Amino acid sequence: MKSLINSKQDIAHGCAGVARGRTPNATVRDYAAKEGIGVEVVMEEGMKAKAAEFKEQGSEIYTKA
Image (cartoon, rainbow, N blue to C red):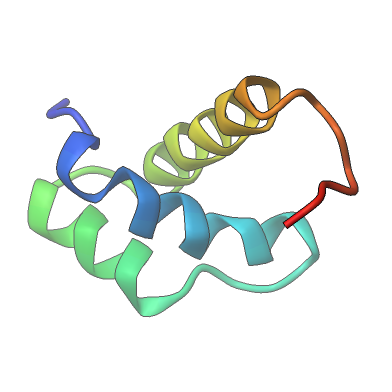
């Protein structure tokens, strides 16, 4: 599987809604189709990216802008 480096932020953003019970957005579906991988794989990678971002930012739910 190719890295999500170029579009990691877009993919992670598209996955964030799924964690709240929504369906994957078009960015996620299009990326999966383009790469020939399942949406589930893209979702997993996107959620891993969001988790890493959360940890890098100090694991705080509320942050100062």
